[in-house]
Length: 153
Image (cartoon, rainbow, N blue to C red; front, side, top):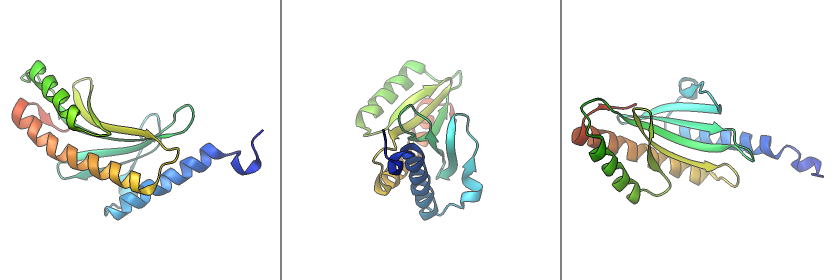
């Protein structure tokens, strides 16, 4: 039987993750009142822009512990996009990414990273958000220039 100290480990973990994310977002110059969003399935979520990329940071409910997910829509595919060439490019780009990947959600190309909040520390939150934001900001322009479609998703 868990002791009273650890009885609310999930809640304590979630509260800690929220604090870390909000601290990092404030450090990036965000006004939290304008960044908090409602997102289906998210325990808490924020959205901000980094260059031309729109970044969503969300804490998601998962079976054991919540997860921190950072995602950016980089491209919306239209009928002019050569899908095999785009998919080959995305797979090649995935090879060079660490801790993130390009993914599809319908006609949307996303750049995503997700990890458990268990043992998460502030430097990891900082790194995850900064790295994904920079990669998305660079990739959206490159992908649209090379393959067409619309920047963002």
